[in-house]
Every structure is written in C-alpha cells, then in structure tokens.
Length: 445
Image (tube, rainbow, N blue to C red; front, side, top):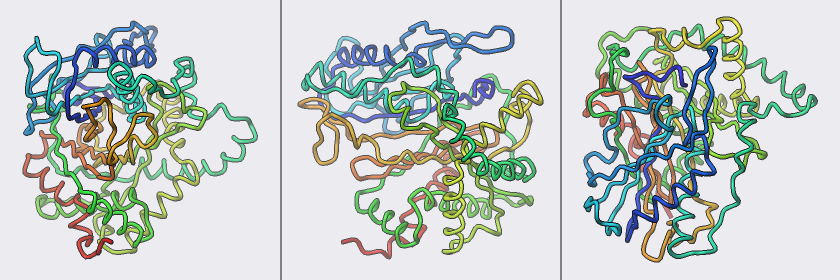
C-alpha cells in the first residue's frame, strides 16, 4: 500500500464521526493525544534503508484543523498523506462556530479522521476513535469509563496474519489454501474491465479537484430492518446482498452509459479482517487482506440464483480462509520480482470497485447508551458515523457500509476523473438496497 500510494490517488481512508451537543475542543485534543500514545503507528513516519521501509516511532502528533461545517461537502478537501514527512493520521473538526478563541462548541460537530491505509485498517481506526471518546468522557462526565487497554508490544506480530499457529494448525489449513492457487490463477488471467473506459491521469501531481468525492445514503431503522428481512428471505448475509446489489448497479450503469462494452469481467475487491482472538488488544494497524469476486456482465441478473451464487462463493472463501491466499500470493510475487513496484505501476485495471461492510459499530463500548446512541458526556452524544476506503487508478468506486444505532449508512467514494457527481449519484441510487432489490414489498412488523 505504501508503494501504491500515488500523488493523484492517495492511499487514504476516511472516517467521520458526528457529535451533537456541547463539544469541548481542548478536552478532545487532550483525549486524542492520550489515545495516540497507545496507537504508535498513527504517530510514526516511514524511513527507507537498503531498499526496505521501516516505521519510525517519532510520536509526531497530527495537526487538528478547524473548519466550518458544510453539509454539502462533509469530507473536506485533502491532498493525501506523505508518510515520509507526515504522521499517518490527519484530524479535522467541523462546526458552525470556528472562532479560534471558542473552546465550547454547541450544535453538531463532525470530526474527520484521514488515515494512511498502510498504518491502519478500519478496525484499528475505530478502536482508536473509541479510545479517544472514552478519554473525552473520563475528563468530562464518566470517570469510570475504561476499555481494556491495547498493547503496543503486540505490533511486532502484526505481519504474521495468524501464522504464529503451531504446525498442526498450519497442516490442517494448508489443503484449503490450494483453492487459493486456483483463485490466484483466475485473478491474473481474467480480463477486468473498468466501470468506464476513460483512463485517468495517474501521473498527475495532485488528486482531482474536490478529492475526496464521497456521497452517502442514510437508511432509517425501518429501511435497515427491511434489508435484513430481504437477506433472510433470500438465505444470504447482509454482506452478500450488498455485493450483489453493487454488481447489479455497476452493470446497469454501464449498460446505460458505456457504448463500447468490451468483453471481460467486473471485479469487486472485498477487504477481509485477518485478526484472530489473540489480536483483540492490538493497537491500530493494518491486518487486512483482500478477496475478489469476478462476474461477466451476462452473469449479473436480479435473480435468486445470482444471489445464492455469490453467497456460496463468499461462504467458501470464509471456510477455506482464502484471505490468506492473497497475502501468500504477494509473498510469492516478491520472491519472483523482488518488489511490488512493477505491479503498482502497471497501467492495468485490477479491480472495478472495492466494497467493505464494517458491520454494527460501538456495540460493546463501555460508554453509556441512550436509544442505541453512544453518550460521551452529559450533553454530548454520537449521532452517526461514516467511513470510506481509498479509490485506486481505474477502480472508480470505493463503497463502505456501516450500521450504527440500528441504521445503515452507505458511503460511495468515487473517482471524479472518471465519474461526474450525477454519475456517482445515479450509482448510489442503484445501491439503495431498499428500492432496487424489491424490498419495498416486504412488510415490517
């Protein structure tokens, strides 16, 4: 991910928390600094020596930028993070009142965390955010709020991806990994088509104007329940339903907008969490792999068999632990070519879209809850959370789903060099999961 970080396409993930009530800027900054003491990769820089990269624990705290709240553009403009000069985290607070002399802010406050994906995945940054909110609560209202602390010493094993198991475990899982060899073969041989044929300028010195371009679709509790009922009706998971709907939305958009539809596969990359129970107290780090689903346009149909096919493939991926296969494949690639540099510089479409489902968030927090929402102080609550993965060259979409307080939110991060705002909104409308999948016919209790 460090090598694949390009000036035009930063390897940045974005997470935004929405707070309502009296927010104290000074207390938040203090709580963030305290939390980051236990998440050292987010305050480290990268150095290179003898062709290898190293983390340097410099303890460099991120600047906290204050901006006015803008509902039309909730994620402020960014130019990415240079890990050789900047820590892996940027923080921006947005409120109607940006007077530097003001400490207590009323109303809604959005806090945006931009993280270089080399330093952490979504699970890690959510843990850092929760530690920060717990620290804020301890300083303002709830003195006894405390999560089991993370252990920074565990970071030394973050690259093993569960390989510290005994030989018996390794031998039992090895046969399943042979399925990964077949998938790696199809990964290399299948011709993947981008969402749109236009090739972006990947050598541009800066990201596209308006980066990051992120849209959202909020679901009500009733709509969220309808999605759950639809998945149950089809005998699939919420994640399976999401993947199918993304395939359908992409294929429909291409039928409407792409005249020269070359033969090939549409591919969705799905991040997979490789943490084991032994990693529960791991600080923010990247412990994620990828699996890939390929479908030809003629295979993408709004039928039960299509949903069931995706469900079977995802179940097989989980049962065979094929998330490891991508890591093993990268290891072999480095043995053969010595570096990932050639792979990242190829002018080739590897993936049409990235889709990640973060699931239900803040369900085990020690902070008090009211109506399903986290209470951070006597007059401050967490009312929403959004997240977005990076977009890569010729991968026009990065889609993320989170569920908080019983409501789902979809964020669609799109490449504005390829898609217009109207294009992206059209695709997001097709991702509603409520209107495009026949969910409106389901009656809720």
